[in-house]
Image (cartoon, helix red, strand yellow):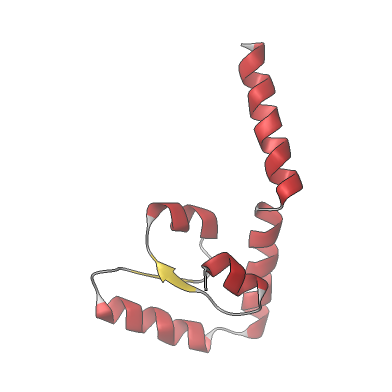
Length: 85
């Protein structure tokens, strides 16, 4: 399950430490290095130990950050600023 969707479903996400995913996840969940089984095992153990409260806080953070209205406003603002130059 993709990490944002995992959070939306109330689950503690485990995901590859890739630049785009790290940017999207804003420090929430549990990232691992693709080439390292110990890194993956650590992320899985941390995910299993994550509190329900932490997962809900992460979900609130991520879902607010990536809300379509907010994202659209950011894009429109950037386009208007570019046009003004």
